[in-house]
Length: 355
Image (cartoon, rainbow, N blue to C red; front, top):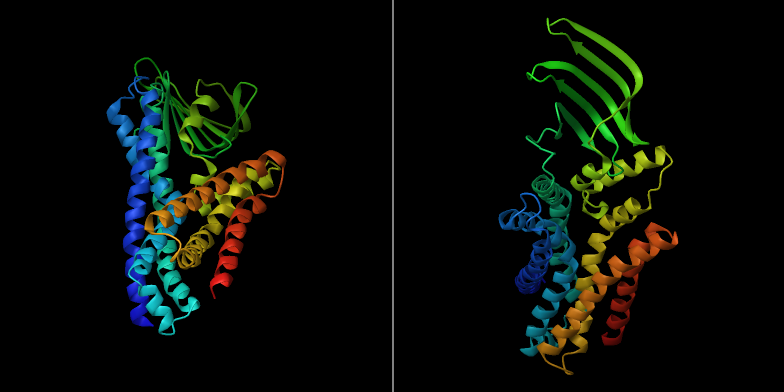
């Protein structure tokens, strides 16, 4: 079985990588075409568009993994079927369970790699992509370092430690300078939220500096902060819920729940993250009975076409059903799991037909 595992794993890995390369090229090209409409706004040019597209590749890689696993397994096993190798394996006593287990071992490696990309790489690159794009198109915002978000509002410089997806600001620091660029005041606040045209900041500490250098420190539980830095400006620096890491989603859902706010979009993304390993495994399992069913009924072209349709169907169902669930107030858990369960049921039915 060790030899069989290695042989099948090598074939599946090879064609999954090829499938992923083709899918990435296609979706990246579409993404680039979508950015052409924004070229010319501010300093957003062709170089910035290319940089943005490159930085979004990890997100596409993560989203396309189940489809690539399905296509790679179908192509690899279909080539073995065309050479009668699968028939020989079955005739020599290798069961469907053993073939499935061998494929799933490679699928497990796919899952580990996808989790690393989705939890570590993609949130970082996606944030950088969105911020770089916004910086080029919104000239009144400048982010100079990786230490939080830096913005300029006339003579005032603002540093925000973290911007939550509902545009709540955490660890706010405001530095105000005079016309001669001398620091005149510094304000720190634990958090802030936009209400009725101004920011309401909490646990405020204000340090005033007069021209002679003397300082005075004031404390107040809350205060109003008027600024041209609005939620509309800040929103361009945020990434979508399904592009956040598992831990970011978990933390933010707790924050929303504690403040009695709506959590459905983030719960849907949270459960989607948890379902990724099962989604990839289901695609691998689905490919195996699909190939055996089509050994005598068609060649590689037919198998590949149906595989692409299945992969696109799963991708669309995963995305589309989530929107249906959110629009109708259904359980986010149902939205994330039902498409996977349906395709798993299809795989099991097909598996029983060829046992």
